[in-house]
Image (cartoon, rainbow, N blue to C red; front, top):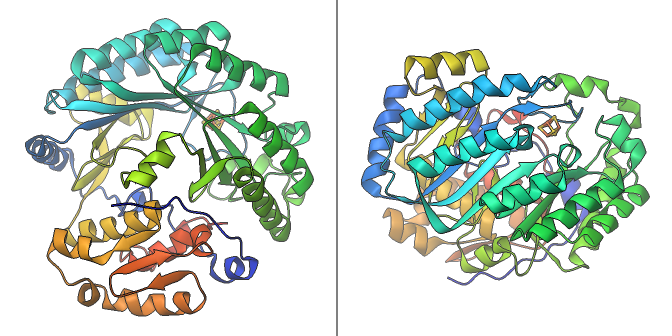
Length: 460
Ligand code: SF4
């Protein structure tokens, strides 16, 4: 299957017409569908079925701690400068790995590992080593595995970066958000330009194979001009991937956002102009639009995976290995198996209690139906490749696509008339104009969400 790397066209009228809240589709069904009716026993059965399939593995490890609160952040973090709190967490995390790994066929190769948070570099080096050794002791890590870590650039030095690379991490990601000091002060994340360039120089010196940075548009005091400077400095930093998140101001859901001066937020029209400028700057400077909010250089694995048809979404966003099953460890982490998802307890006390009792520390989950699995395939094709070959879905799931999705095809017709999709006997293709609204197109195939739109952010 050959996919063309996509371009993207910015059509303001269409964006304003169709931009409505929709899931980001890092999974289907979305994580909001996980329920407490799914128990640890159900998850154990799902792991046994996964073992039978012998699918390769991805592993995720969650470190929930941060030294200070960034006001835009909606993550479930524990803010503390008392590093002692990491000690009991690590003890429980190691116990969880030991206990859960006993259920998993660990002869299956691990193709991807990701440490996220929170702030994984909250851990001291001996703690990083302890966790690393427990992972490598219990799982079979493929020599070519992609092993990535998120770092907070404010709390890292050259030796720490070199240490991570020497230990075995080969991908790294850090948040810039915005270079502008006034914006940084307003969101309580001051990180001077020199610091960010230093961190990048250490990363290059350590020879990480891929570097990702995050930006956020829609923050207080941002204008098209100030954010243009941020984008240009980011291009100068020369990362392999750039993710440009849309800031959603929802202080009633994320209390830290109450510290953000609402009257300093860019107006909706300015925000759209900022996005348009960002896309133009990045795509004019050798970054390809991968999808949603991701950009990558043409030689980066994400762009290559899209070209090869192996790009997929999981709870971390776009990922290069479509064929793995994901096990998450640590508080709040989510496991994503072929036909079941499960999430660990969010509160540390609940997580600690379950681990101490020796039970899988999950709080909720979902067992997918065959209908969910078929719809997931359709939604992931749209989200990752911007096109879908009906015959491939028909051959894989023994359905007639046009009959099974007759309602959805009808719902797509107005979008076709507006130039967002092109429908043919064998294909559904998202046009260059539709690419920025891809989740508003994918949502048509989502039978779980149609009545719950308010829980999701807008695409733009
Ligand atoms: S953005 Fe990162 S460092 Fe800041 S509070 Fe959220 S998880 Fe912590």
